[in-house]
Image 1: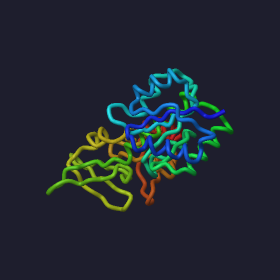
Image 2: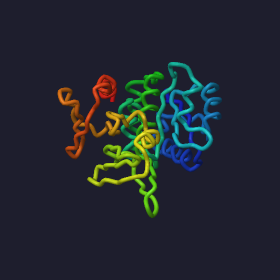
Image 3: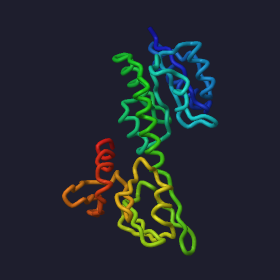
Image 4: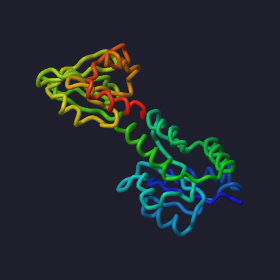
Length: 250
């Protein structure tokens, strides 16, 4: 029997592209039973047509594709294949959650691999998989955003993922980056902490805010974190237990 699928993408050209690929290469395997441009339309279509598979774009106006899962229960009775223009950083989120994805522009060979995987497993994803994905993706997206700091004659713009750690310096702070640079900014460490992703940046000490994705080693005897670029920062004793719990779940 053919796999019955719905396409959810706000771009008409993207929806049509998948339709054409299916018609030309996989007409015997896959049937596109509906094509919609929003999450609300998708919910109605899924409830009505009961598809086996949903091709879901992530970035859509009004409501992100991720919001689709808010409308369904703990277990999904359809397979989800994410369609994304994201490269590099967001792909980690897909892989960690064991979810299938297609990169735009969709390649016919990649679509064929997705169909083959569905035929072999035919298992829909539980909400646990989806929740894992959403959490990982949100962190990845946050980490690849730019953050802006006031400078004497303008602004310093940094990619969040490039920040190694921050150190307090009275009412100022010094930001150390992966490329070995240090930037003094007119912000307290608390102010910087409030602007950075809480799931990744940890206040190890009153004087240090660390990007935990760049941690290499934690020395409990010395209460020190070894970071990329051979940087070492202090960890206060009262933060050790919390830090260990976070590191175990990274």
